[in-house]
Length: 220
Length: 118
Image 1 (cartoon, one colour):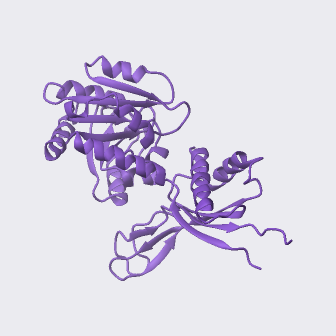
Image 2 (image 1 turned 30 degrees about the horizontal axis):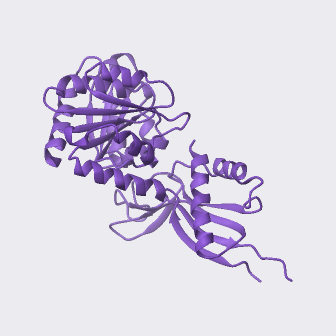
Image 3 (image 1 turned 120 degrees about the vertical axis):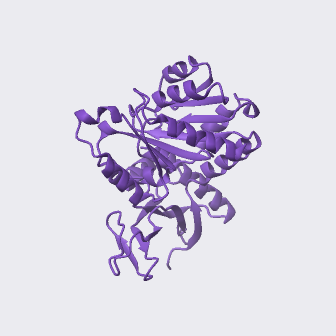
């Protein structure tokens, strides 16, 4: 007798999707724009945050959730800028998930915020797979990582609404073809919005600030 | 890198389904993993085996079916699979065919273990 098969057809990540749906509802009620910021370690997530806070904190209320495997260094860096920052330590896990955000969100008064930035664990692979209930995913690729990365890590580029190509001030010293990054990212994701920036010099960041403010305005 | 939590999620869902269908023992769990998903099948099987050791699932196999990148062309309707990401229909040359499968992470079905005859 053939073994009896029971059809299941359930998404393995359904628990995360369910919790993220709860997060999404709370974000909507609080009328806060939530962005999930992802990149490799060292690409410039925290530097971008510091710059963004400096530029916008007089105009909008910003909150930050910091995801790291260990330490509260990033939350400290960001809190020094005068915004509320909550650190999540994943204790080894390679990405944030919806449940971690659900807990962290309790520490904010969402109605007081215009923008909540979730800085994900530095990793170009796993965070792309896990939704948090965010309004938009933004990723950073720094020029020193190389122009071959879109095709090597396609999922991250496909999932992101925004790509920030950081460290363009280093282009005279390295072999990185930014046009190649842009064209391959657009092949993977024709709708992706791309900003070329340097978080060290500040070059190109005005366009990113304008994009953020447009998004916040459209959801307020 | 997150295969352990994926393995645990599989077991959570499977236990729910077993209760729902009043099944006591499984021969196999059949899952589909897309080539584009951030999950490594061999690592997932390894984590699963660690998790189920000395449990009621110790003899339950986890079968992973890898779903290839599958595309459909907007222009000519040609359906095809590809080893790597592709941006051109091999039949008519039209750009940006639609990805129709390859991102899967699904439990397809469970196989009930045959109980010994009385």
